[in-house]
Image (tube, rainbow, N blue to C red; front, side, top):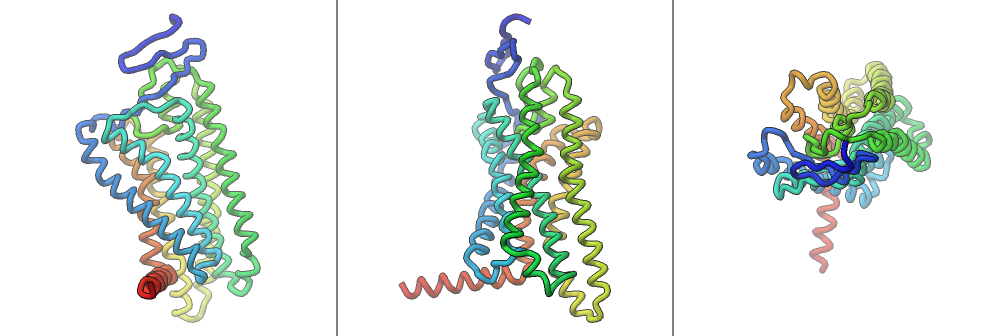
Length: 329
């Protein structure tokens, strides 16, 4: 190759490192004419996600009755959800509304890291919430002594650290690659494999490490969740009272819904990205990839608000308190 090459709509790329200064995010290939209409439900979902999760965080922090491990983990899940959708939705809306498709190379790496790190953290938090339900149902008398505030902080930090350490290598694996296939990413955000496929180098290590990270996070967390619920079901079935069994199961309903909302689209996206690209249209895959990141943050606050009695009561108490304060003023 010559010293530099130029392509229509591209900046110069240094041939010594073959690292582009920026990438172009195309949005949803084949549906460019409908970008504005597609953006409307995504924008609406994002608003619900931000308002709902910030409302949960505020409620849990201000209601003393919710100062328990279960709700601390829920607050951590809400923080993760808000951060996760904020890491890509504003840029996606800029692509759809203003055709601002450029993203700096390092900004792309940062977005990729935070998206993958936060999805890994969400999986870990769901696993911690399953362990919380296991302790609450199987060891109710020891619940407060096992899950102390110190333990909650330690396991939360350990889960965050695990996700960060496993996702940091992605940035180095992407940065080492030469990019001679242009800088157009057929996606709405910087995904690890979408960026890696622009390289003319060997991406086998990227593929293998991606599978390893998925197993270490998703596989491990799903195993822990499955074991927890196996023990929970055994403990609940052994209860003599039908009311006690119903009450025990009802405390898990919200969490089970959150697991289904998170893992079903995540696994579908994971397998279609690696094995279904030839059979599934690319624009369908991109839409699913966006929904898999945006659907859990949108639905989790609604599910927990509807299914959890303590949260409903907390909302009512907070509303009545604010109303009485406004009357006093």
